[in-house]
Image (cartoon, rainbow, N blue to C red; front, side, top):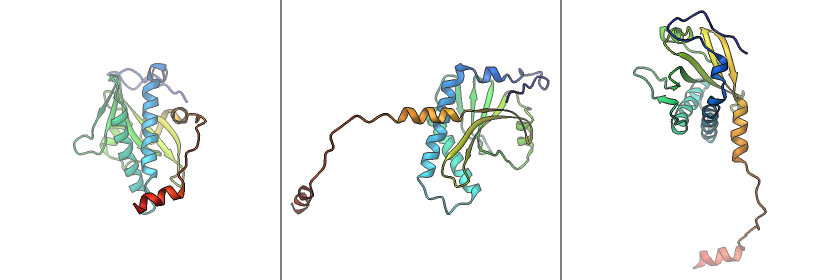
Length: 194
């Protein structure tokens, strides 16, 4: 979906989806998608059955932020740890875009700060990098950027779920034919006896 926002700001350039989606950002977007995938893998290794959806969302988001901080080191991408009196950690891309990390759907308690962000009343464009999980919390189903033009109104989205598949396929390499090496039970019991 491409909806250009041309009329709202005089102090910053209009949001240009073609510039945001340019090939020059592809590697950064791959690293972000990979960080979310890694965070979900760590999250999935724990028994989450005791926790409600809000707690799960917070746990997953904390892991996403940590993985982004670890993996997304780039001259064009700066990570800013949680700001005073908030839990929001942010990424800044090319000193033009503020990227916030959120489980989809993006639903915050409406505050003045949230309104400033979603009404784009900041000196940089604010984009949410959202990740969606299935109803059983067993897999990531979508990763996308969302640009709000007002609370509750997403005026632009850019799905980067395909980058998750690219990251995973690079990790899975065909196994070479290697001879199987097995231990005989008697060898193990002899060692135990000694």
